[in-house]
Length: 182
Image 1 (cartoon, rainbow, N blue to C red):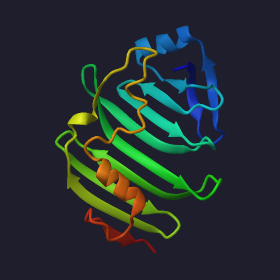
Image 2 (cartoon, helix red, strand yellow; image 1 turned 60 degrees about the horizontal axis):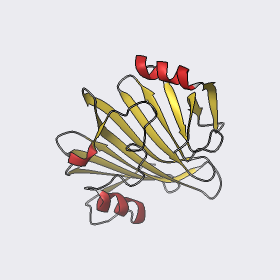
Image 3 (tube, rainbow, N blue to C red; image 1 turned 60 degrees about the vertical axis):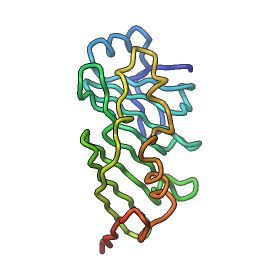
């Protein structure tokens, strides 16, 4: 896995901001200050890992460099990250306009809030469920080794719910309810 470093990924412009040397990125890692690791390509990364204090975010980009899947981890125990949020977005054609999205907000006790939104129709759905989150834990990565974090398919225990959020909308078997805004 090739890794390039920068201060951050400018999502709106789809470019890296402030390129960092490996030594500068290592210093940011050691001091737990903001830095970003671009994976596989510095101009068209497949994903990036953003680290800052006790937060690690992983965002997978589609062919148009739009945020497609995102994972947010929090260091809840020394050296241990907990996946606290997973999000997926779909877009209208090649535009940057989000058409649909799904978010899972996890708590360590297994209580989970699922949001699905159809941005075109103005429909927001929410479900409160309890799931096994034992697979949501990862070790805080060693500098430069992000392989455990950049797994697209993380949903070992909640994958069926994740997939149903992407396929079906109001009235799915996951007991989601619809709230129509406007």
